[in-house]
Length: 212
Image (cartoon, rainbow, N blue to C red; front, top):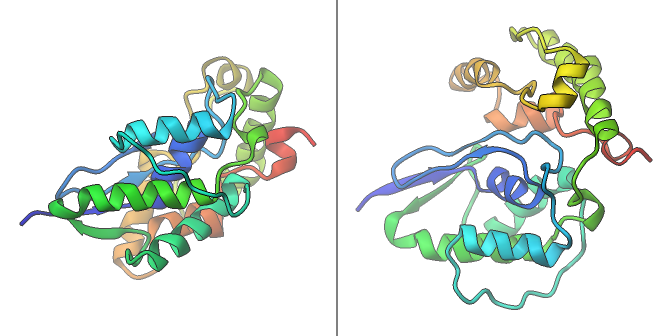
């Protein structure tokens, strides 16, 4: 019987907001890379985002789920973790343990939890250059200094112009995540995502992403 470990909440945030993410297969450890902003393509509605999520989880006939409330991406991790725990999938150190035989059940419960707390429609729209510029400013002025204050070594970011044009950089790079992973093993942090969601939030606040 093969077992796996996956960072489900990170995967759900990524799937519903268009962030890049590294998934997990049976026997592997999942690792999410939440950039905190909607993807370039975006979604027209929450229903469209959930349809994409159902396809990702290979759910042929997704159930009708009554939303509890629409949320901002920053709320997703806590609510999804609580929902998954309530459905019998305790989240330990940001991950869920499962066997290969449990994959379909895990996927279905992951979908249901996401459908109960769909991302607010305004967060699903594609971002324009002005929004990407605000995100860059937040990352450079807030996220990077915070990570450095934690003693983490970060790479020099691209110029603002280059980032807005290419959108190919994020402060929670693999290099930074590797450092955090080492410190998790040493017991300095409870899990990797704790650093990027609680200590030094990478997901920009609402006024940054939406320009409100």
